[in-house]
Length: 324
Ligand code: TA6
Image (cartoon, rainbow, N blue to C red; front, side, top):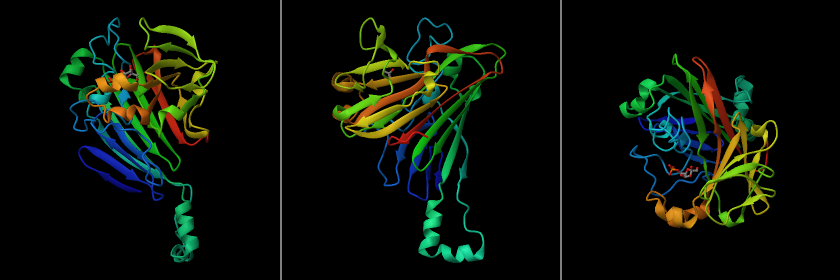
């Protein structure tokens, strides 16, 4: 695994060519490339990467509040989507794992120079996990004043050969209980939004935030397509909503399958023309044609954490239709 880290970003590349790049600012994944070097995430050409504002693209982290919650005493003073995506996280380290033993015996090492040896080495199904941490002491004075609770967050980004996993563990280190929401605000890259359909949300109830007042409990009975501003908070049906895979197709080709762990909600967002025009850091303006936010989260309700409790949520984005 090739690896580089400086005081602003960490990048890891697998021997098979896949790579991931994470800013310490917000622990924001800003790039995920497949073995051919094709970028899988959308990043605005005007995204601020200097920490002056949350990144427009990649995978910003939303915690402890999704959106704004003016009626919620504990989080009403926080900026939209909370402080996780605009705080400086610490890089805690990396670990790699491979399922194929690397050549150790001299004979094997000798053949490693042969084609067979090279194939064996390339077959090593490597993965690399990058860990990031944020706690109350790492917050800005302003954030801590607005949300004074003791917490710890560990965020792991794991690059596999055919998927990317992001996992967030939040612990309550306070004597008081508090409640939170979390979401991974993933900007997936697509070739043409008008040929995209999203499967897995059939029969799911959703809140539509594009209507005023927002409308609740609407239903989808078929695959979702995007032809105007879309901003919906879905709760897939069934007794384990987090277990429903969400697959993004382009035409008849599955491009991404989003698997969730303990995140019952999925937000689907595309700003479309007018809202894209209205965001200064959204460039190019027709970039809405090349992105789709599919955002696993626990946002429809509040997760109550008693002192010492932990809440963990994860997503795995699998390339193609494969479902691990
Ligand atoms: O993900 C949906 C959403 O809540 C939209 O309502 C829109 O506000 C989007 O997030 C982007 O929010 P941001 O604060 O990053 O501009």
